[in-house]
Image (cartoon, rainbow, N blue to C red):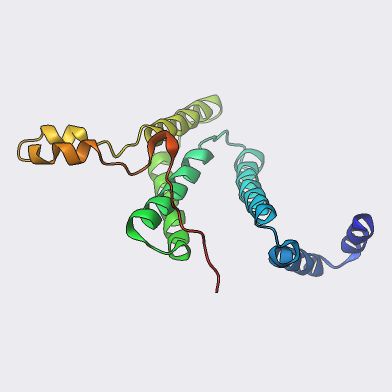
Length: 179
């Protein structure tokens, strides 16, 4: 059945191929009716987009930039933190997180714009590791602020503040709801 479907799909006009694939993707949750497989499909498309973006940078531009995971983490943690702590809807946060990740990418890429080849690769891998370690260690541990005169009364609150959840991550992120 699948072989026949792909044979017909390859014989179609390019526009109709896109329309057919978009219809399949949109109707997939209705057809499957299994939350597990819908979640697997969501992860598949997220990682496919990450892989395609890496293909654009490495394949077409020829830049050995491996900091994609860090920019992905900035957007994901922005969505998770604003959703859990401030109850902002997910669909409002999607463009906000994308813009914040883009701003973060611009700020990081400005100083390393002149690097090429292995040097760019090493710097971007290092940047990715810095972001990973900072999020795992919960950057919200702001105990150093308690040493500032006048903020000593906040010592207990600053030492117990948890925003990123450390190695456990952020729990209770709302699922996106359509209709």
